[in-house]
Image (cartoon, rainbow, N blue to C red; front, side):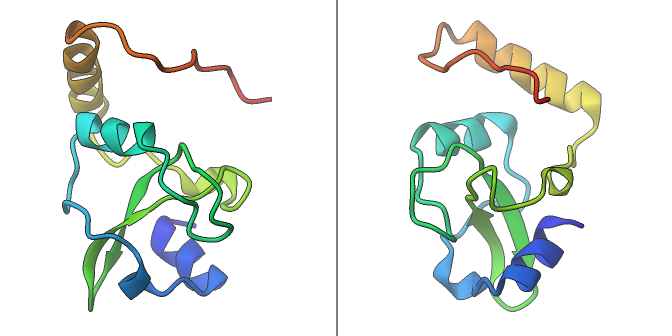
Length: 105
């Protein structure tokens, strides 16, 4: 299940979501997550962001709480080499105030 299928299943109106770049770079998505936008379903601050591609409304930010969308909807949609290059570039910019990632169980 991808973001579009999950949003459709949950009844999300793409018009209610913020416009997003069609293919955001990692740094853009990271910046979005640092803002903790409200979850589209419950309104609580979310630290997960992705892009929903809607035919009528174009790309839109989809900011779910981790429990809202099944874990298997999150998929890396860029080649791993590009992801790692962008991650290195962000890391080279200096320290962040992000919490360390913990493996999911």
